View (tube, rainbow, N blue to C red):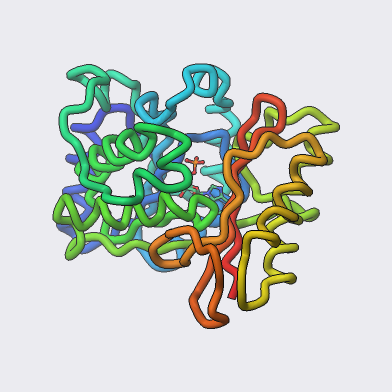
Length: 283
Ligand code: AMP
């Protein structure tokens, strides 16, 4: 695996590779890698010629400075995992490399209602930060294929929108890959490392609450079902940001269901200081 720290070096190398006809796949991450990330690497390797992974803990997408400070950083372990997975290139830039002009936004992305719903509502500015970094990374890597995890359901929608906004739609195909889970069902996440033993045992309730919604879903009013699931989380000590049943395509919250509309259940909740998110397509 080749490690790049500078955008210009990476860009030059990839340009030469592209000219020889190589198909480039890209997996952007914030590191503290787990098997969920590696599943994206494997997916990229199966359909492209050259897989690029980036590790960059992006300061502009953290609305909570403490969350940024506490974000796990495990470069040596990450490099070993990427080598073992057969990743071809790692881009590991410093903050000054991605934001040479400073952290102030240089442009505003029109994300429409996405910024007012769910993660957008509870993490103001978060998706603008995601767009800033992904825009810069796309300009550096210029991948033909981009691999994202469904674990971050709304982020997949935002990045798909970004790709339209910045004119990458014809150049880059987006692949949304399934969520990998621990054996008890907890969605794999870098933030799981921050959970204590007791919290880790309880954390799976978030997935169980989503499964409960999927099992109990019936046409009609959804308020009671949402309330029951929310209570399951609260009773285990979660502080719930949202637990919502939404239209799978637009993410508008659904007060009721006609039995046909495609739905997804999404949750974000704190266990102690750690904020976990998960989602489950329902039908
Ligand atoms: P992150 O490092 O958390 O920013 O995630 C980098 C990429 O990995 C994003 O596209 C995530 O959606 C994806 N990802 C994170 N967790 C999982 C998981 N459990 N299963 C599949 N993909 C994941």
